[in-house]
Amino acid sequence: MSEDIKQKDSLKESTTVKAPIVEALKTAYENPTYQFHIPGHTKGKAIYKDFKKLIGEKVLSIDTTDEFDNLGTLHPATGPIKEAQELAAKAFGARKTFFLLNGSTAGNLAVAMAFTKPGQKIIVNRNCHRSIITGLMISGAEPVWVCPERIEDWAIWGNIEASKIEALLEKDKNISMVWITNPTYEGVVSDVKSISAICKKYGVPLVVDEAHGCLWNFNKHLPETALKLGADAVVHSLHKTGGSMSQTSMLHISKDSILDETSVEKSLKLLHSTSPSLLLLASLDAARANLETKAGLKLIDRTIANAKYLRKRLDAIPNLHQVKSDFGYKTDVTKVFIKIDGLSGKRLESILEIDFGIEVESASDIGVLILCNMGNKRSDFVYLADSLEKIASGNHKDIYYLENRKHMPMLEPQIIMSLRDAYYADKERILKKDATGRISAEVIAECPPGISILLPGELITKDQMPYLHDYETLEVVKG
Image 1 (spheres, rainbow, N blue to C red):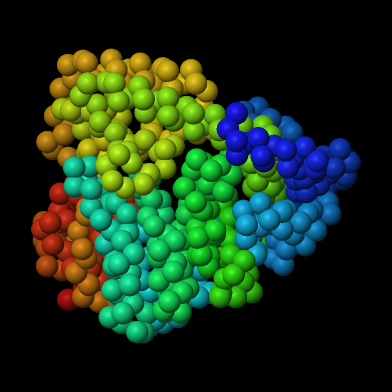
Image 2: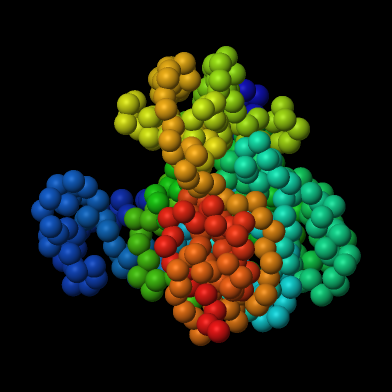
């Protein structure tokens, strides 16, 4: 067992990990009442029987919303929900933590609505998630693009250089915030500590979309979390790697943040449903609690050990290559991006799924992304490595490789109009072949990972066409 696990285990031996929302739901389940309130299926009694059989009666019996069964409210946070958010803030090292029920998208939208205004300039990395763009369209703020380093052999974005952030801040004194994504979708890590120091030097807040880094605070063998490196606000997708249910995330305001959390609270109240799911909230509570238990910490340790095992196996396979920190940039060991000579990522993804029953996180024209998750056993990685070994030594033809391109374009945008003006402008839909030279009026972003190919206000060029293979028409500004 690693030293960080031993240390954290010893801290937990003297206390009991609490999960207040989980405990409140358990109490409600064990003390049933006659229900004359929403949801209308009334504890599963009015549910389509095949669905009920699939997910179970117990799940439906605790599918409720706040305001009932002494479960507290989300906005403002009261009761078990308030206590659960406070425990999450303590666990992640934040001053204030908000539970999110529309993924990290809700957190990014709330940040934009709370802390940016029409006409303000915000430094944003070009490979940001589309939700950040949506947030800026809502607020009317204008992105000042910073392009990360390019890892050309892999056709992926790399780290954001702190010097580029400083150059932009020095050039334009009207920039009011820096908003970066770390790590990248493929696991490349930027020097957030240096970027944070630069932001403090210029007196602007730093927001980090750390959606894929929610485990980092719980093991020293993972990168350092932005909450410890000086960021003012951080978004975590607990559902991606932390063990919560789909569409659940957290937004943290750091202990020394210069941002006002009350503004975020107001924004989230506008964005969230007035009938939040207690099942989803409980899954966030449970995920945080699990990460603080001995068992949860051991799972993270096991995950890292499994990732290292997989990487070692992959290094020994001829014709197979992987992105790793040996190339001169830091990476998250649990995110494994690979390619096999002669195969596109799409073809490799298809072979893995059809011939071996293996599903990967995503595929580009170059390679596939594999997430080493807490729920995977060593035997899963043995089978994966064995399968990749067979594929790499086989004779697979790949027509797709030459005909299609699906990775995100590493192009610097040519901005003609503001995001907001272009989005709300009069539009027309035209054939893709006629779109070169026109101004885009829509967000085109492949999910995953949600990185934009085209943005409203951006000039459409012939360089973007190879990345738009699946589109027959495009929406452009009229005229």
